Image (cartoon, rainbow, N blue to C red; front, side, top):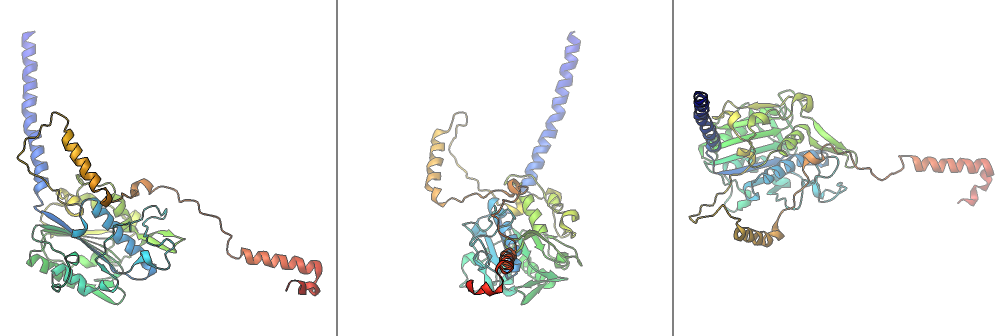
Amino acid sequence: MARRCTVEICVLLSLFYFSLPVSTNNIEDKAGQFFSSGHTNNWAVLVCTSRFWFNYRHVANTLSVYRSVKRLGIPDSRIVLMLADDMACNHRNPKPATVFSHKNMELNVYGDDVEVDYRGYEVTVENFLRVLTGRLPPSTPRSKRLLSDDRSNILIYLTGHGGNGFLKFQDSEEISNVELADAFEQMWQKRRYNELLFIIDTCQGASMYERFYSPNLMALASSQVGEDSLSHQPDLAIGVHLMDRYTFYLLEFLEDIHPSSPTTMNQLFKVCPKSQCVSTPGHRTDLFRRDPGSVLITDFFGSVRKVEITMETINLTHPMEHVQEKLLSEDQQRESQSYVDQLPVSGIIHQKPKQRDWHPPDGFILGLWTLILMVFFKTYGIKHLKHIF
């Protein structure tokens, strides 16, 4: 009996001994993944290049990405938002001061706290390239500058109308894939980024990253060369499509991401298969130094968390009532400046549209008057027509 107990104890000790290195290695792997990026700050440049009401979806695309990166922690001070048109204040908008990304009209991506840095005719190829390369006049305010450095991870999102090797700005000019590649090379030479994620939602979008040659750059596109990037979510009340397919499913994917999410870029590559997008999304990772499978989504869509270092001893065994009271008082002071959370897309994406008020179909009133006149003529004849007029 004693021998049997000794054998069981040895087995348990051996299992415990071999499990320690495994758990230690897992912790080290997670810590290495967390610090592998080496960036200390995040920036985002979000650009809608299209004007006119029928391009409503391009503004909604950009504002949807803007909403997601703000929710994940990137502040307005580190977001450069460029909108070529103001759909929220367009006279055709049946609901002024709103831009919706879903046909149920329950997710207003315009919100109450949108800070547009470049609007209308300010959205040009020249201004976009100046923002990227930092070649701006001294009088340009900080809110219109990309103040990144060699420890910055930058997200660049573009949407609009394009073709093989170009993207149109305002239907009056265009930027080529060569110009864009050279701008990114200038950024690298001037140490303006650590890692860069480029996303474009346009027709033949993959042609825009074919000429890239700068290091530490990853690119995604909504369609391959020769393919169109299709729209999504038509709305009869507004008369236009609300979003493009690729950005719609990208937004749905980002709704499940939180600041500490372990989701990697490999999962982002599968966000919109051809069965959903109709076009074939593409990506390019050969210039990127890290394995995309170890790159967190929050390395680009989120923000580096601030850590407060203190030399004071904190007792974690008892309730920290004084700390909680202090936090509550601070929250009450900032209550007037807090943002209102909007409904998540994942909660409303499958809801049925609201029933609208009934309106008579086209031609109904005209047909009714025709019927009344026919009955009158048949009953009284044309000689009594003078009693009507």
